[in-house]
Structures are given as C-alpha cells and as structure tokens.
Image (cartoon, rainbow, N blue to C red):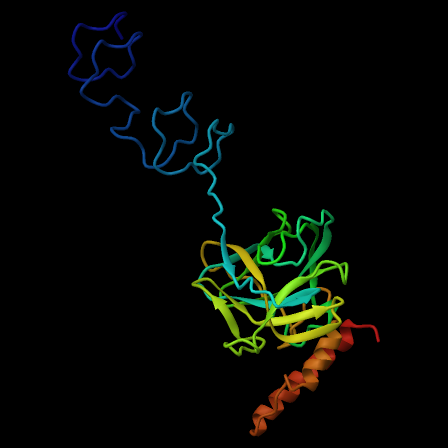
Length: 313
C-alpha cells in the first residue's frame, strides 16, 4: 500500500488496507467485507454499539442492562360490580358465589362492604375473608372447605354507604373463565359490627340462593346466605350488600386442575370426608348398561384404593 491515500479512489481495491483511510469511499466492496449487513449475528460482538437497534433481539442477553426500561409498566385498571346497599337484615357475615362469564382471566382484588357501624364509633373491628375455589353449596358449615386469605381491621361508614376495605387486603385471587369462586366475609366480634344483607324472597324478585342477582360482561354475583357465629347458623335467600373489585387479565390461561374424580376438595379440607360424602350422594353413578356399570365399579375401586394408600386409618 501507499504511505498516503491517492487523490482519487482506485478502480479496484487493494488487497491490503492503506495505512490511512482514503478521502472518499470506494465503489466496490473490499476483501472480507459484505455488501450488506449479514442476516445472522457475527460470532464476536462489535467493539462499538450500532447507532440504531436491530430489528430482532440478540440470541443472548447483553452483559449490561439498558439504562432506561423498554416501556412503562401497564397500569392495573380496577372495575367494580355492585349488588345493592338496600340493607334490611344484619348478620355477622355473608357467603356468596362469583362466576367468571368472560373469556379472560379475572383477578378478584378487593371488596366494598355495607356495615351498620359508622365513624361516630371510632372503634374498629376485625373482618375475616375466606375464599373457596368452588361454590359454597353444601359447604356453609365446613370451615375446612375454606381458606382464610385475610384478617383486617375495618372502620365502618354506616348505613347506606360503601365501606372501603384497606388496599391490598389480600393477594388477588385468580378466577379463570367459566369458573366459580365463593367468598365468605364475616366479622369476628359477634354481636359487634354487623354486615348488611337483603332478603330476596320478600322483594319483588323472589330470587333463591344461587340465582344470579347482578351481572355484567365479566362477572356474575349470585344470591348467597347470611351467617351467624362464623360457620354456625345459615340463612338462605339473602344477597350480600357490597361490591366486588376486580381487574381483567389477558388471555384465557389454563391452570392444572387436579382432583379426585368429581370430588371437590378445597385447600385444607378433609379429602377423605369429602370423598365419602360425594360417593354416598351418588357422584359415582350407575348406568343401565352392563359395561357402564363395570366402569363405574372400576372407578369406585380406584377411589377406595387411593384412599387406602394415602391415609392412615
């Protein structure tokens, strides 16, 4: 190569680079250079970053994180579905079912309640929130069929007004599309604060427990039951007063659903008791055909074997 560049570029590039760059770019590609960017990344990283980001991400993460996040976090938009604040009957707590009727996953995030206490009484009372990943049907008196998800202090706002619970009172509960989840909200100090519910048989609607009381494009809230003394006394055909606070997730994610046949056991519930109850109530049904009867018998044998090998009698 020459010690200094020529005044004008040569018609063909030299095989070796000049000691200093030419004043103008050559019209042809030099040895070892591609005419356009390669479609696949080079084995070694370049010493300086490119001025513009690549269209596709690299196969390996960069050694140093970017100083600015790629985008702002997506805000959570909360919605509410309100039953009523009519009142009428004071109880210690209420049980009710919530059904996801949308095609998306929904997160139950909080509740607003209706209580007889007001700010004129400065004392607060503890509220317990239970949830069950199924309906509360036939489980109103079974504490083991429920999971306690929150115990919190509440200062009521009085009759006809929504009482807002503390933010993040519990971890959001995921309710999949088409699924049912039951909730039980109850004050601990029986005879202290009271929670309002409304009879649905004395009104014009004449709705029964498990009838849909209110709904929108996402959720249904069903007529439930009133409760006294925790899981003790049950009063049917009462709708819980308040509002469900929720957010809509993205997509219809599928979660594994492990159960014992049709046995519906909640966290901490005595599976053996539930299995025995379900079998006696006819979950394992009998068919008129001989083959179906043999299949039902085989299912029953499997259930008995499973219980015998998993429980200490």
